[in-house]
Image (tube, rainbow, N blue to C red; front, side):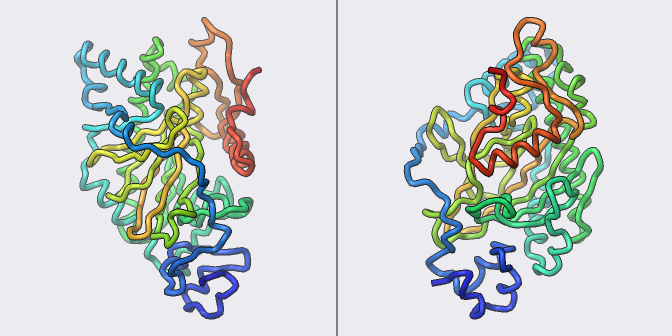
Amino acid sequence: MASIAALSSLSSEHQKACTSDGISSIKTFAESNDVVASIPSSYHSLPHDDNVVDHLADSIPIIDFSLLTSHDPQIHANAVRELGKACQDWNLFMIINHGIAESLTEEVMKKSAEFHNLPLEEKKEFKDEGLFAPIRYGTSSHSQEEKVHYWRDYLRVTTFPEFHFPHKPSGFKEVAFEYTRKIRSIVRELLQGVSESLGLEANAIIEPTNFDSGFQKFQVNLYPPCPRPDLALGLPAHTDNGFFTILAQNKIAGLQVKHDGKWINVNPLPNCLLAIPGDQLELVSNGRYKSIWHRAMLNDKNTRVTLAIANGPPLEKEIGPTPELLEKEEPLFKSIKFKDYIELQQQARCVAGRTLDNIRIT
């Protein structure tokens, strides 16, 4: 039985993956020959009373991006209605015909895997030094505060308004720059469509939130095979803090979303992007379009890699319900700086709370 206490018997590389505080690389730890049928008890994070269903998976909405951006007024209007319905009914949708070449996504995925395959000593150059550090490599979720850990290594990079990125592996920075800029363009179109679906002008969200100077975070998550996927999670249930997180993954499933109180396995269409509405979208829509609870499940055979590109307003921008909406209704939420909201979310996650409830007007 493998345990952190038994580190002296592990390989040199595996010992480097473990610190006195726990495990600093789940990839290296998982690849140890000692991890066969058990995992440390601090990784036992999967609830046993969850209601998981599969029959609703085929009902997840699909948004054809080429229709949303069509210059034909009727085609565009129909796509806007579909977008609003997806945001209201499901809080999640797949995007097809989005204009990002599959070869580009695959190259970013390949370089992301190469980064995680670097020796641990090389990756320590980018060790997570805090919530707003521009480049952050680490493991689990919020390992300094959390009592339960998660079977994941991550790389988090601020890519807008300033573009930061690791200098290795070769070529990673260049393809990530192209990819993240294309994602920003997609999110901008989505926000315009969301505004129109609310009966507002197309730029009613973009302009007052200063989205064009907004914060973007590139995150690549690596979930190694776990010997006990029945006990552990890659990421716990959470909502994202921005407007939209755009998710792509290698061909390994693992995302679950909560819909009508039930957990649903998400099986994305080939070369689609998953759009996950975040808390800021719920905030600016004054509660109409809600963020969605989601989590990362594990398996015992294959490594799952995801690209999660989070897009929000500028960190110092105070955000509240969209002014045009407040001409006809009362605000449901207080305004708050995006940076303050992110910090508040980290505190709320430590007690399994929902951050938006802290700024809700009662």
